[in-house]
Length: 519
Image (cartoon, rainbow, N blue to C red; front, side):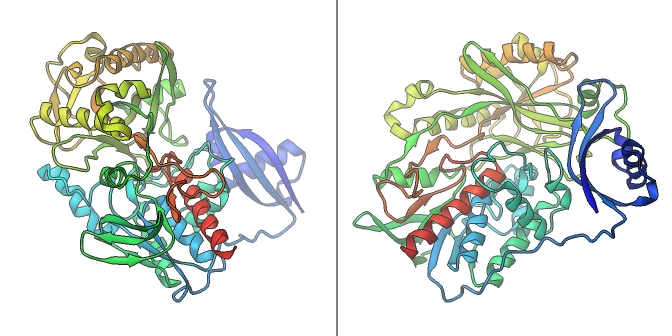
């Protein structure tokens, strides 16, 4: 017999199967020997009180043998000779669209401007060591997209958009730990993601799909407002009547291509700010109300949202036990992001702290039309490069100094490997963003005593929170309203905000294509 229970236990008990059995047996009045196994179905941390507890949903096996159910791939068949669908971009949206196309009996042709995950590592190292940025292979472009090096945060609020568990199960079947299906805020880790992405690529190829690297799309060919295929910088001409456009939030050349061709796109509000780094020990002390975290709790995250002068100020992509990375996609700009390894065992934590922007903020660039937000973003990133000495050194300021408008005399060593340059960040950030962040940090300090410290360091900018452009599509068919056969998809098109939501959106676009071809 099996029974499900909701329980709350100490962290030490949650990690020990024997202690968990004893706790459950005592709680429900059973003999411990009657419990043959306890499966954890869901797990979350309750850190609201000093005595931290772990919330568990468990399935208890009573006098019944436990057999672990394998998580298998869907029943894919060979699609080598099926109709081809072009998928532009091998990030989460593109890869999961490709898997869904195979499931529906269609052949995905994935076109990726960058390199595979193994080759991509060399270009990431070059950004850190030599401050050189390859426009096709960096933290945003290449196999797996930005998701590969954003450490695999899998938490999403987009559960109404699709089946989150199906996406998690596909990740597990390609090598992710089963914990991602259990934890309230699942996370894979940058060190483990590349192998999982590689396994997904091999599945696509195994069942007859194609994945082509080092192929930058330079044109989408049209006839009578219908797609007919794509052209690459390398001279490839690939024909298809259906194209999924899943290029990510940083593919500025694609936005410019669409605008130049007269294909409808729209400016979209996004958020922009800075990335702040604290010691992980300090964040643990604040969040867990303790001097030392102990062995049975993970490094503590935080999440904060405040309103300052009618603008939202909030934490974004918080990385406990992580590092700050250089994420520029073109020479002459500086961009920051953060990631964590699977164990989240680095001594520092970091988070984007960003301010919501409005369309009227882009008015100085109104002559750029729907690209106004992109130009706003680009100008700040280029100014950061100049202030950093025309290198990948990031403009930085101690946190309290930032709130007071004081140039920091020195910057302690941070996890950002290309290095820092002490800068009064008011010289880089528009005044309304700078002032809003100053007040936001002060409010954060009141909410989290100890957070506002001059040992923390502000790095700027955090500017790629989401796409500055939305590519419109029909609400039901997901097809572009002007161009037949074009399916804007994922984060770059303005319809997702992370790995899971992008993957779900990729699946939805693939399903709509399958439906349209069968009509």
